[in-house]
Image (cartoon, rainbow, N blue to C red; front, top):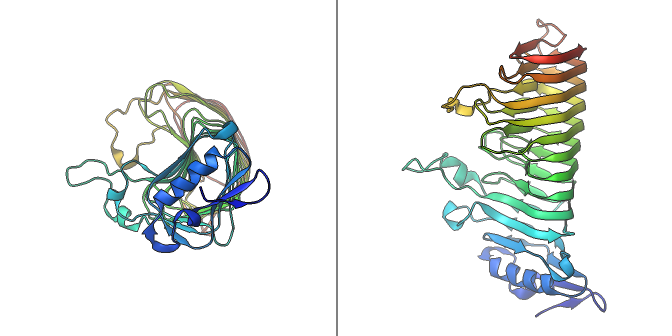
Length: 381
């Protein structure tokens, strides 16, 4: 074991002391995992350190539980570069933190970058020559992590989602910058599923898909002061694609700016879905700048028209609030409400929405497109 002391019980586990070479070419996953094993087993306060420099890193999983069931602090100062070839990834992830309590992952705003090097993967399309879906890895995944914080890191050009949370709770994401081209496929900025009590704040996300997407079984999520664009906006869903999905409740999006995106704030469910519910969703104090579809409820969501079942969605939407939303849009409808004809949207509130079309010849008041069944629609513009 190679260590540098910070005190009687504190240790820093620097990956370069385990053989990681910061030249951007030498594969470093073995050194990273060796440093992690020692940091995880250390009986005192431990810091897993990636210093300045560029590290070529293959797929890795940093797994707990660690000593005393508490994660080492993780500090990343340099640049991590993923392999560009999909054949380098036996699973659908690049960097995973799993089964950890108290994870504190911190970077430096100007230097820390996780570069997924996704361009070659995007060019391959969605499936191989045998029409089998390609396995594109998520850049940074957190699974079964609790009481954690992710601060001041950058993610760039992921092959798939940039960051995802699965079965996590009590997490703060702050000061994150996520970047990919507007036409990069399925490069969601942050995806959350099966998780609770997650707060995303003071972050900038511009990607080729949803800036932030909320999946099934997610509750008590707060998205505050996020700059979104380019991309597909901030989405609840898609929901209802698979059987036995758990409900979504308590999602708040506020004080955000959405710029040049395909959608603004959106709730999307699949047609023919099994029964579930999304309730208590609030979108408020939001600025839209040249957004195609600022406010969307779409219960006939079916990308690429691939659905075999066009029966009505059975995802119940209840208590959805759009408040104090202003800015500009560039399509015919500022507000699109496509609700299910099977289970009505219930208690939809649209209050103080001031969206102007980007061309002078169109009306300055927002236009509405409504379809399906609604119970309790309140519009105060």
